[in-house]
Length: 585
Ligand code: TXA
Ligand code: MG
Image (cartoon, rainbow, N blue to C red):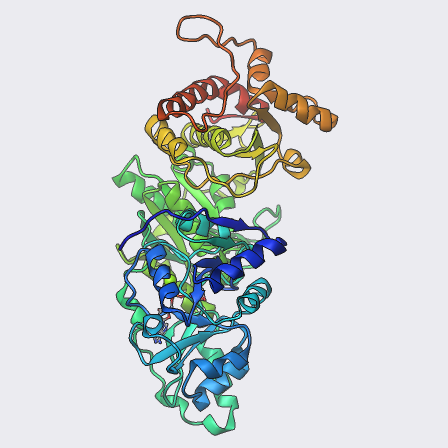
């Protein structure tokens, strides 16, 4: 399957009317465009144009033998796509469209077989996402689309995810923000007498049962409903590079503010029940592999308890992705694919992910998580907790302390190459040298963040390929996912320390925002303020003006990364201190 980077992919920001017009005209021209829906982003093409549909498979890097869903913006479009609307289909359409459901019906002759992978049925879906509907309306045709991920990646739930997988391979990406649901639609076969769920989603079995039961014609037919495997199942779905283990939460109804000072014993116990299996399991993993990096996809209770027990060694091995309150399955679903992508990108060895019991959205969430865990299939049942309880006797709930956060901003011109490189280097250092605590109180953990922005940046551009390669060669790290963003007041405000790449940029920022005085430095003025002088290879005082390597030879990129790495390493202890943090002793 050929996959050639031949497009200058246009990134269409929210509110860019002209861009939306461009994107929809590309669909009409038979090209491929990624668009948001309330479930996940789709990779769309004119469903009635065979040549266009084939391009979807090329962009996705997978063979065209998995059927695609056809997206519509109005129910009146269904008639031309299907040869029959069964009574079951009618109920589902009336009750759940627009929404996160795909209804499988017998296809009409108009729908090409490349859309349905040779099947005589077609899946129809009417999303409820407003921008999606606007886009589909402008396209003027039904749009066939699978999820917009590269084959082997999790479905994308942000435009950034799509950018990571599809930049250069499609005409445009329409940014509609984070997908609300975060899991793909419920796929229901409605060709027979009873609805059959082929893939669970946010429209749950209970909701479908209820809808069918309410319909007087269908009372009583339901008992025979069964759940065969989805045809899509034969594809290995996303499995992160890391092993995934599911830790089923013992309680999900705990409504506890983990920061609260006065938890009663019952609340403390619940908090402990939720968090301790994660802690014990990671301790066990570290026993086997003392170098392991462990990703936690958990609720905030786990993180709070974790930071409060203050196991520094353990903390230095764990990366957190917190989806919200532990028991919030909607939040967990919303964040699951983003969390898996991010933790994988941070190159953890194992991901410990919260699992849910229950019949609602829990079914869809666990279905996706189980697929991600497929490789190892690990599930640590919560009843293992009895042993766990003994093992974590050293966790004392009384030692709870707070965590503070501080962040640094790198400012460059366009926030593509230099921004990505600086951010990548410092992020890596923080990860490797942590954990940190407050300068004032070693019991208070410090979480340090890094971001970058450009004074004249266009939003959403990635670094040059040379930058990414050079960064990898010099540091072993990965900056391919970096996207540029424009520096504005809110970005400045959100950061405690702002370092610009050149002197003139620091002047420019201070000129416009004099109130930032004391927080903004150029790399060289910051260095000078610490009494440091940078010497070049020949011992001469080196200029700290770092030109953007754009357009230069690869060697220049490499040199740029190496120089920035050297400088940021020297500045690192000062940066940490200025952010109010220090390493745990
Ligand atoms: O939420 C969603 O459904 C997203 C957004 C973009 O709409 N789309 C999506 O598409 O997840 P995709 O291609 O990743 O998954 C489509 C699923 C596959 O499991 C496929 O086998 C099933 O729907 N499907 C599609 N048409 C079918 C058909 N005619 N018969 C049986 N299954 C079908
Ligand atoms: Mg998919």
